[in-house]
Image 1 (cartoon, rainbow, N blue to C red):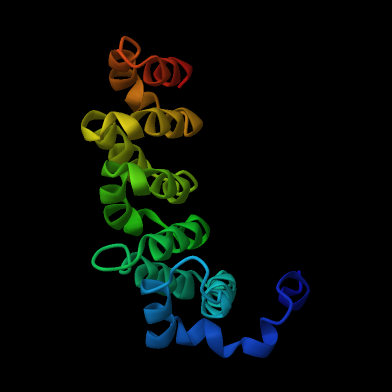
Image 2 (cartoon, helix red, strand yellow):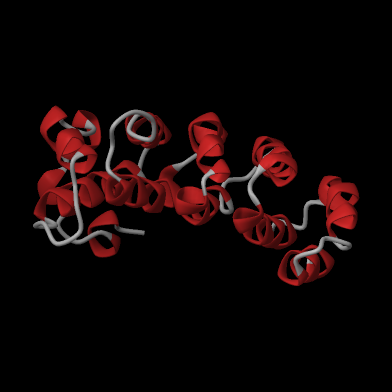
Amino acid sequence: MNINAVLPGVAARSALVGAALTEESLKAVRTYAFGQSRAPLSEVEDVVRASLVSAEARGAVARQLAGLLSGDTTPAGKQFVCRQLAIVGTAEQVPALAPLLADPATADMARYALEPIPGPEVDAALIEALGSAPDAAKAGIANSLGARRCAAAVPKLKELTGHSDPVIAECAQAA
């Protein structure tokens, strides 16, 4: 398959694969707020797509993005990072994503990033979060465990089927 046909414009920016993300683009993501120009984010998206041609480049970009999840990155910036990690994330990024499951404001985006990542590390993080996350995040975490068909989560999910919040109980049952 010709990469130029799959990723138009990437060939013209082949330097993006080796360069990973620049400090300027990382700063733009870190400080991004909804309503601002998305031009810097589009550049990051281009690098993410270009990184898919190489496991090494993909890993480097994923590590850079995961580094933005702690600290003073804006909520909109963290949401953007999670969307990109859903594309390039690996088990290596699970420790950076897992803390976001504890906050209802970031739990959904963390789940979005975690669900497509293969491996037991994701299942373990979701199971752990299921026991400690606030109720506002538990239904979604249960849904993610069900979507991943995580057999190891069954005991924790069974406990939640009797939860006082009917939404949590129903999601646990469905999972």
